[in-house]
Length: 126
Image 1 (cartoon, rainbow, N blue to C red):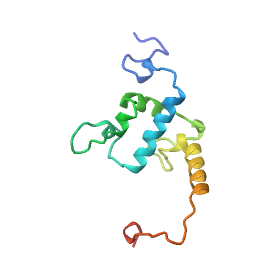
Image 2: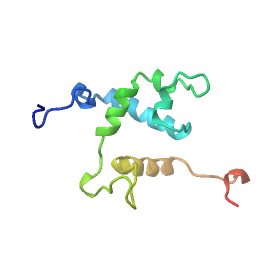
Image 3: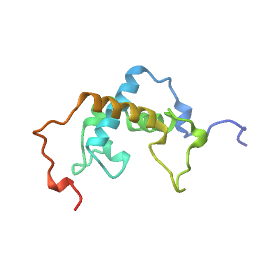
Image 4: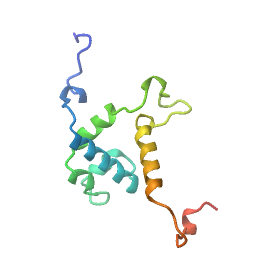
């Protein structure tokens, strides 16, 4: 019989270790890389399959299991107002929007398009 409040043996939380600042930096390095190199699933970033292999996520020094654990528990927003998956208005980035908003603001502060900026018609909708 399972005790109330105990974790299942294979729970990612049963192996929890305190996160360090270095791990947070690695975590965000992988997320930024994911925004540049899009794959169909999170597991694909650690895949060794020759067709989809990209070494960045593994080379950062964070395992797939650790990344997924941090992704599960990393909250920077009020979870009480989060819309559940499968419901209208669900946002998979809800937990990290404060960081995204800060990054967008900082990126806009440091990059100002100038006259010689070219927009390729392939990236514009018709």
